[in-house]
Length: 69
Image (cartoon, rainbow, N blue to C red):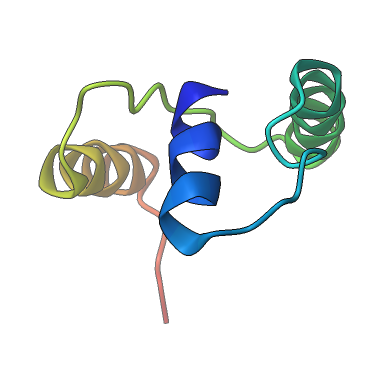
């Protein structure tokens, strides 16, 4: 919520819905429904760099022997 509020200030938007706590909770619930129904892995990226997150994803792919082609 804090990150969204900061984004709104940076871009000069007046969108209150985007940073609303209840709206964010509904977005997260909907996301989890989609992830669960598709059996998608969820990663906690809090405090991680893009490179660290990418490494986790690549490791998961390698363990499952998933082919990307």
